[in-house]
Length: 183
Length: 344
Image (cartoon, rainbow over all chains, first blue to last red; front, side, top):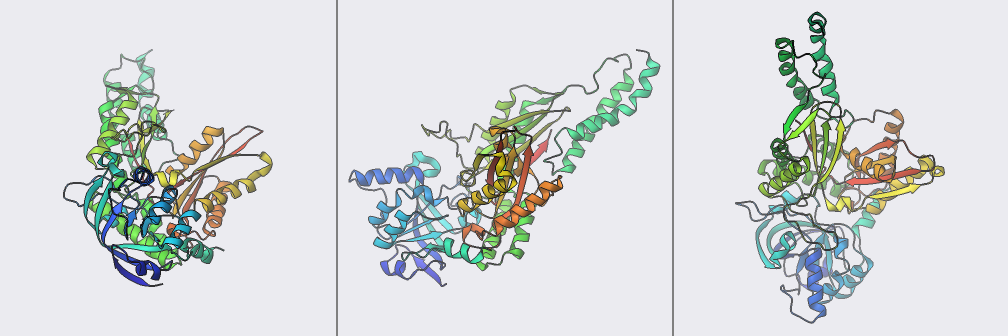
C-alpha cells in the first residue's frame, strides 16, 4: 500500500495508479455535494443543461458541514454515508467525475462506472469532523445556498487525508480488510 | 394532630426524602452519581427547616410539590446540546483509548488515534465532534412531585434545542415532514421521551443521534421458538449488514421483549448506559459479552476497513413480553456516542 500526495484535478493516470488501501493526501479544490444537490445535478444533466460546477477530473466530497463559526474557514466537516449517492454517481462519473470521498461501500453500478470511465472512491474517517476541518483552508458556496448544509461548496484543501477504499480495478478495502480480520 | 407526635417524626423524614430523591432519576441508566447526590442534598435542608419552624401546618404531603421553571429547562437543554456535541463523554473517550491498544489493524489503530485527536480538537475549540449533530433526542424523567412553571415542558425543551443548535453553530438536520422534506432551520422539533417517576426532580439526557448510525437500525418480531439463538443471529447480522455505514467502532443497543414500540425504545435507551458498565443481570451480562465477541469477530473494524474492534460495547435492555412474541430491536450508535445529562 502506497502513500501519495495528489492535486486536483486528477489526471487519468492518477486514478490508474491508485489501489485499494493506498493513502492519499489531497490538495487543491474539491466540491461538496450530498443527497439534495446530487438530485439537482442529475436532473440538470438529464435535461441537457449546464452544471454549476466542473466535473472533468474533479472530486466530490459527500459532506454536509456544520455551520461555520466566526474565525474559522468551515465548521466540522466529516464524510457522510456514500450509498445514498449511488443512484446518482454513475452518470456523474460518465461525465468526467474522477473521484468521490465518503464512507461505506459503493453499489455495483458505481463500481462498474468507475471501471469503465476511470474513477476512484476514497474513504475519509467518519466522525473525525473537527480534525478534517483543519485541512480545509477555504470554503466558497458555488450553488444552491438555499440547501443550507447541503449547498455545493468549493473547498480548498491542504493534505486532506483519505484512503482508497475502492479502486477502478474492483479492489475493495472493505471486503479485503474485513476478510483479513474476521475469525 | 398533636404536636408531640409530630416532632419526633420530623427528624427521620429528611432521610426518607433523600431516598426518594436519589431514586428519582432512575438508577438503571445512571452514570453521574455525583450530580444526583448533589441535587438530592440541596432541597433537603430547605424543607427540613420550615417543618420545625412552622409546626401548625401539619397536613403537608411527604414530598411537597417543587417548581421547576420552563426557562431553566430550556437553558439546561441548550447547554447540554452544545456540551454533548463538543465534549465527548468520558466513558466513550476511555473506550476509544482502550481500543487503540486492542486493535490489530494498523489502519484501524490510526483511525482510533484520529478519533482521539478529533475529540481533543472538538473539546478545545468548541467544534462539533461530528458534522452530523443529529436529531436532538431528549429523555426527560420528571418527578411526580415536580411542577413545570412558566411554560410547557415540550416547548421548553424545543426552545433549548433551538438555542443550543443556533448558538453552538450546530448543524440543523431536521425536516418538518419526511416526504415534503423542508428543513425547519433550527433543528426542532426534538424527539422527546418523557417518563413520570417518583420524587420532585427533573432529569434530562440530551442524546444527539446522527443519521448514519440511525439508518442502520432494525427490528424483528421473532418467533418464541427462535429463542436466544435467534436473537444473537439477528443482532450479529444487523451489525454485519451495517458494515462501515454507522461509523464503527459502534455501540450496539439491543432491546429484547416488550411490545413492538417498547422494544425499539429499549434499544435506544440502552445506549444511555455507561460503556464498560456491567449489566446487573448476570445472564444478560454474559449475553452482552458473547455478542460483543461475535460482533468483533465479523472483522468489520474501525470505519469498516477491517479490524478486530467493530464495537466498543453491546448493551441490552430486556422487557416482559407476550407469550406469542419475541421482539428484538437493534439501535446502533456511532463512535461519537454523544450524551450529556443534568438533574434539576
